[in-house]
Length: 420
Image (cartoon, rainbow, N blue to C red; front, top):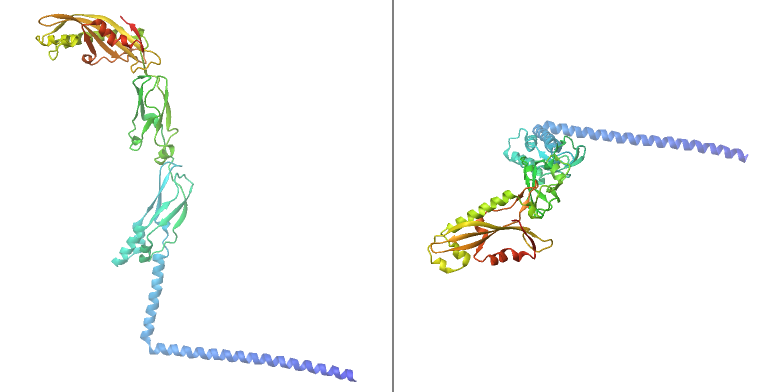
């Protein structure tokens, strides 16, 4: 009996719980509906207030609409003028030089940029600010020796204060491009217009290098020799251009070499022996020697007899002198010995005599004419400088002392040979 009673009580408790749940849900729904009603009532009140404000204040509403429209227009204009300036549209990259050695120059179209900002603006103050900003923009590429296909970084710079005053903002101040359109360059034989001239006599010859280019840039190049003097026949010297391949490439020229070897194979050499002396040259010199003796003796600006003797008695006579019976006595050839400490490589001496007279007397006068550094040209011709003969001679009445002083005192450093 007691077990059945317990079962009935459990059933009643379950029914009570179900009723409680339903009541709770109804209360929540009622509360939500009441809150919704209040919100709708509040909105109706607000709308009524706005409508009333609009009905009662039409001027204020109109003014607000104008202000709102102005704000919208300002935002649109500012966005157009300052928020959409793409620098790539106003910068052109120009290349100079050959492919692989080119330089990039960034050219800013400031006028186009200015027009973009100015549009139909009439305010001179604003236009001035636009101009100042547009003119301040410039760009650079941080790479040299550029080749087609290279990736380049373009950095854009401008006056930030001017940008602020103009209401201008660039979309970016750095962007990348790929190099293109660079010309190959002009292939050039750099030394085809460079003249190399060897002068003087081996082994003391010298070289002269002359730039013969007429093109503006090439004509300014300097070419030098690694050794400019003391050059011997057969020596090889190097001619170099001051500009390297990269410098030339940057000016649009492609060269294989900036230096070349040159051999001094066309030099004259000093005469080695008397057998190399040519009769035609010796005869020409002899004729000049005789002419000089005659003209110097007849010159009344000095006394030949006094010059030869040192005797001032000849200064008291009339200054009328003459030379006769001219005769070649000897021709000597002197060659410097190996290792000898002497300046000249070789000497050629003409020894002559003549009877020199004045109005009272006459004397036999001996003359020695000196020439030096005779040479043989690349085609085998002998020659020697034989100008200014009036400054090349010494004279004396004493033959032995004259020969000793001028010729024989060199026998320790020179080999002496009689030519004739």
